[in-house]
Length: 448
Image (cartoon, rainbow, N blue to C red; front, top):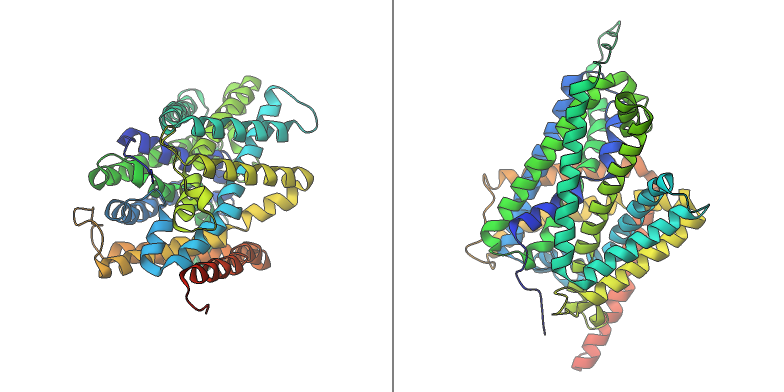
């Protein structure tokens, strides 16, 4: 059976990883980070800390991806470490809610901003959302080469645009008035709580770096290229985030940042007036397109992997040699994303809440992937020339501790809503049992 070929270069991998990380969050999350913190140095320090955490996780993923390269990414790692059942539940949850929900959510944001440039009526945002999913899926179906070139252009444009926005802020922006000093010093417990709250949104904004695992099966010279991809991409994103947040602080200050519901728009408005709103709209559209294309690209890879390994979903596991990609997986993924867009059109608040509540499932499986590194190291069945994470076992331990902390935080902030994401994964259990029964029946073995 035809499968993935090594056709992606280091710059393609960097573009995909940067595109997955740098999205719409950078135009909203900084205001939430500043909500309970007033020290600019501390705020910038948290964004630097976020980059360090991402680099630690990315190095762990670089070992997994270079030692066990596969288009299935995390699905493949979990399969090798814990068996097909755990891997299937991961892929099920990813396809049913997490990845397709992310695609639909980003598409909605794109639609909302596209409406500002050209209004298509009361359902305009949904129309733009559907068109973006269909259009970018068509590009990915057309071929991996074309999708990678589009991602290269979008990522470079996004990076240069964010850097330009930061430079303009320092060049022509008037420094914000210093925030008034508090009458009484902030208690240590209150400060730590504020830092914990801020880090949730810092890490959400850095989210998406783990998607680099899904290009391992198509990356040239993966054993050496993967670590370069994750390190370069992390540095690029860190420079972008620190620069734009420093510019926000310079122009708006922590107090104004904390009160802003659209910090990017307020920032550009302060710099360029009304034309700034148009510039910001275009920048958000570029960010949304970059993230959306990368999410569509990597999402189809895990669906392909589970289809390749299971008979019931075998149609997803067909790799089109002409397109150099999983065409059927792309089509199914797009259909589910469009269905979620339809649901979101009917109940926008409920849909947004459903997407938000997938966070606990995401962090649970990220923690499981970190643990898989220890399991696979012990098994020692991967490529001997793969990259080895430095300072083992300290580095993966730090990664697992961080993932556990974020899992706890996600559950604490979503409360009972966390059950929504868990329920979506649990729905995969009867499907998995049915698949096992069918496989055993075909093999003439008694069903358990």
